[in-house]
Length: 242
Figure (tube, rainbow, N blue to C red):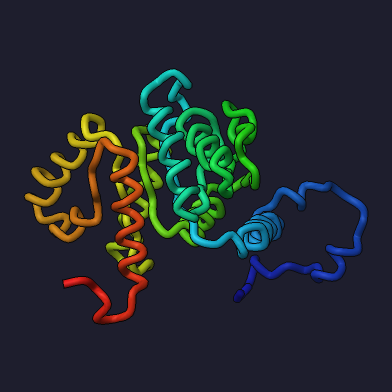
């Protein structure tokens, strides 16, 4: 950092550290927040480093337990666990709870990455390994780093955020391959149509960007699609069936 003229600080770093008088506001300043941010990354990396293969499952926190989408999320979590994959959700209620429940009851690893929000009350009861984050960007890094793909059920702004985060990372080649399956044709078809008829037609994306998305109503097909793409990518060259 370069400081000149009025920006030069007349005290030293050691002085500010050792001086115990004055306000404690320094713990809330941006430089100090770097330590909190660092701590969130360290804790997340430490907790998930040995997780093994995992799939992120997203969906609305507002999905009631008696809704068909809850049953779909629960089945998706169970099928992924039975296939040997951990299930990572946002740790909240609704579809996230359902996916965690399915994975946990199937004997799989059920992970919840929660976020500090004024209107949600911690991790759901089916999370077997959970972390609560202050910062969305730290939490989103964990989702993408430790998930090999996403299954996305109907959801709101948060679900859309995670969906387009994944699409952006693939488009910009920040991740090599990241299959995304949208579960719920009636819910997602309008979005796909808009992206094709408006965004693609106006030249804002390529056809290959849309090819990243798979659409189905069947949890079994959703799991098959995401795992086929992941496991197919891990095969050595020439190993694909004719």
